[in-house]
Image 1 (spheres, rainbow, N blue to C red):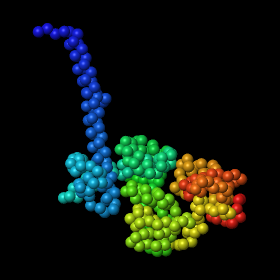
Image 2: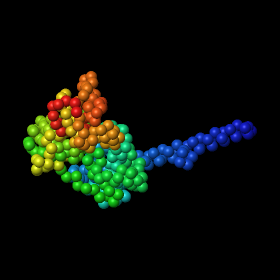
Image 3: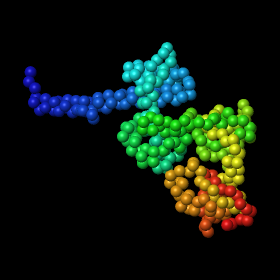
Image 4: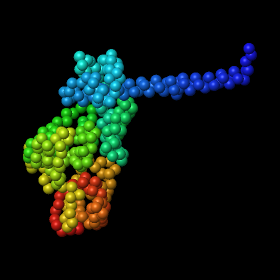
Length: 345
């Protein structure tokens, strides 16, 4: 039986091409799939470590079933990852309970450090909406190595807190105590300052965002029962379900004189009223904050309502001899003291 050398040569190159497509170092499908599976396992392990840390500080007992539900993964995947983590001395198991070891806790803090620094970066340096910060940081926390993380921290000025008020672990794994109590635990007439807003679960976080509740705001509780928590902040009334209020952390204040009761949001200014700019809320960050300052919304400036648009949004504010149009979602970040009923300043 004879073989056509041309056909044999063609077949050789076809098989060579297939072999390279499948097994070419780094870029072959075999290696891509292998590295993808390895990366996915790394992500699962890091997600478990992070969950264990959060549960540890809240004294929650954690098992396979709990992790499967929270991470939306199969029990078998979690079990496989747990076995590997135990072999690496990251965790220890006692019956159905899983606990962090010292090395696992250190690893978890590194992941949390990346996540919170990246949220800080998104808040200060980009135009992404705050609803997107958490999910984007969830992706990035598995990608940045320690060197890149430290560079990011340095560029941000080594911040101590992320935009939600969560403490950011240092390079050496140190983390400050947040302190405070939940808003849902306060009693009627208690006063305090909002220092933290929890961004999980997402459905509750979005309710808080929709209410325009801000970190740094001083509050006074008016009502607290099993159905609702009512409080005043910056001249406005807010009503939350207790389960939502539990995601807001407040630093209580004993001395009422520490609170400026006359502080209100610029969005509340009415016709024939004037006010004095006191500050810009911490909720206004990065380029948005710089733009407001460039437009003249600086401490001590006099401001009055000049024009209103359709549906009362946007509105024109007269400040420093000119009229500046702001949408209400911008004006709520500017804090003022109303000073007179004399109209344009």
